[in-house]
Image (cartoon, rainbow, N blue to C red):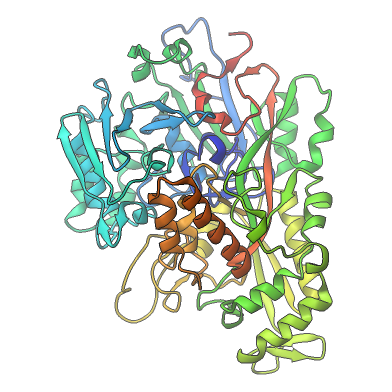
Length: 623
């Protein structure tokens, strides 16, 4: 889950592995790999040989070479309508460009479409006239988009499990979307929103043929859509992306080959380097869970790129054949608390005072300086300090200075537990049966830094009387068993915000119980911070942890989104980020960077925020 290009972008692995181009993801994977929201994409696995037909049929004698990205985790699905994690999105983006990109200068770069407005409330989307679906579905038209938005994104039942439904519902009403021509449609916002084009709504948005969705809409058959062979092989992608699907070996390799029909080659409104893109015969995501194996493969040239852990950067300094680059990024690493009803400590974790007490127990500077070797900055709220919307004066700091103290954490925790079934018995926290409380902390495998952070948290909690059992899982397994949740109570859920928030926290729970989670990173969207509402609202599409805010964030986000006055917008964001730091929906640990090792022949990556927006134009030096 995960997402964002530019300042919200990840490198070759995203939920915290550098991601390929996390234009639309909310979650990422923590550690040396990155994901845009909740997991990561390119994080690493041993490279495999490209397929025999992974060559440029236009000039087979002048091979462009293969790009093999090592990643720690595989994709969940290629059905973008139901899952919003970066590893999955990265694979889909090889075959589907999305509506448009944003440059590091925050300018719209039209891909399938351009977007414009006169006054900031009604936005017109104009599609190119040379976009063709595959599998016989004909031309992409505005009808495909309007149908998908109305029947999937805005469907009252959310039958497809779309996690971003809140973006298309305003004031409990669907945002009106109207076809105005064969290749154009209008989005009529209820109020002015000058930042709309930079939000991960149309920015980077994928589309699916109306005819595919229609097959499953009447019966609201989410499972059927997920199993559809054309969906799971991207057969409908046609000329809509730089590569075409070749094969997908789950938890092993995803291979795409150069698309000789790529629509941008016929476009005269793009820079010349786009007109012969992409510059590789094939693009492979090679899943290698073990970080040391990925690094070895990078040294030997088996991988073109992979994340480099903070602890390994020095190994590559001065090494011929490998360039290590450090990129600013917008993903937040947190210690996430399960406030849904299947945690062993949820009655306590639902209390703000308990979460504040626990925030005193974890030394953030040790994590940043010792575990991450300084390749991160301490975080205190849901925004990086480089954001123009960050406000020091309202942010409450925990886990540093006097606000890091085991003694103080114990005092506050003992007081906060008074109205819960838990209490201190001597120096240990016990439950109503006087049994010591043991918390389950889970994390995604693939990063030594994430594993070490999890173990460090367990030590810190032990110092305040809480036992912690630490477990690492493959990201796919972790997402299915711990992030996804669904209604397990009687009757039907009164609402469903998608796979990460299936309804009220007392009835919608994950398959497996858990208490703490780390290594999943959240996109902070410093360009358009109101995009984080999905993490902070009770019905937010990414609120898998069951947080119920005390602050009226919905109203504050509405103010921040609709006002054209910068002072008013700044005041709203100041209140939002101050309240989040105080309420501690999770313990804000740090804002990291993307550290990526490349074959030294690769040309294109620049160490700026949003560096992957033009990855289709990267090439090898020999070209």
